[in-house]
Length: 629
Image 1 (cartoon, rainbow, N blue to C red):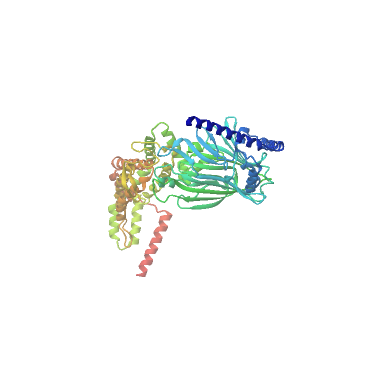
Image 2 (cartoon, rainbow, N blue to C red; image 1 turned 135 degrees about the horizontal axis):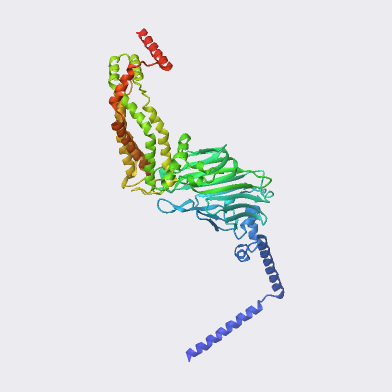
């Protein structure tokens, strides 16, 4: 009975509570006047919302989730940003990304700042198989700073742009507008074509003359830290430089080491080069002035370091008729000469570091086209070998003349020894007799040096060609995985100063080849060398030391260099050794040379004006010396 009674009491209690609640709700219901006021307030909110949607021409379903519901929020925005608070109240005022992509590159542009926050090369990877990024994770910033008529200093990188993605034929067009009202704005316009690394980029304003202080220039700032892409960061950093075209088509660079800055005039383009890639800002009308800086971020070889250089550019942009209108281009792509030469109108190919003067001409018009042809039907490593053979065969007449001169000097060596012994106490007379012997024998002591000097442009041009030849990037040959980087046959558990933590085989082979080449050439030069005069260094001993120092320097210096370059030096020295051996055994007959020299000595030798003048000067000097005794 007690349990049943409890149930009845509970039911009664619930009924009483429900009745009380109903009574409270009834007694507190709004009056008719209050209902009318609430309805009017709701209608006003709906009208304001509809007006905002109409002004901004955006989809209402999106706008309802982002636009502030009351005027207080809008007032706060405007208080902080002035007229540009309008843009911060739009649905686009958030970190949204719009992507532009074609077959070659992918660009991501953020509403905040309207700038490129990611630039990816779709067909290239780094040494550790990660896609090549030129812009990523905040390593770059693009900003316009300006002042307003109500004395505010604003930066576009802090403000929100409204994106609109459309098509222009096959081209993708992205309009990013920083709005003051629906018809007053600052616009960044990006246009990406199919299968192209170049992006058309326009900065323009509409109706901002009454909002922005046009008596002060807009400052364009572009900053970027170059991302590491190669195994050796020190090697990559060596060829990472800020390059620019300016003043009557001059191409200049900031220093590859340390920190550097420059104020330049009439800048046509600025290339933030990352060794084999570059981010470039091109202007259809040259910038009047630009201040550029480069900071070296690499202190030593490191597997953990992520960046090589930090670049900055600051450019004042002038208002024209109260508006900004600047036609620019972005190039995000490789430093491949074949690709860059297609942009002839802006001469982007000049950004490739071929070398200065005659060296650059040789690389641009000889070695690059030659290697392109060879590598079109040969493996890349084999193409290097074939090109090296062709270069050495082309230079073989110079090698022959050099060796012939050495052979002649060797033949007349006994007579030179006689002169040296006979006139050992008369240096002036000894010099005169030596010159007479040279003249009668038809020997030019400089003929051995001239061929070597003639080879220097080829030597230096190839020294610049291999480290910067994009076509070698990530191309393998034998044990070398990448001909544009060092090869590795052993990894060391420690680091050797100036050498590294690995062993490269191609530099070892090149060092061995140059050792034997120097032994051959130094031996010949020592036969030509005259006895050391008192107070002068012993050149014979110095050359003997260089036989061992030069290969050692090459071994250390090239251990972190492109394996393609070491392969070239190995093959080049090897071929030169074989050419010299062939000339010695089958071309040059020392007996015939000796007989010809003896025959020439019997013939009267007419003295040239220069020789006569030199002889007279030496005789006068000798006479004056004897008069003082």
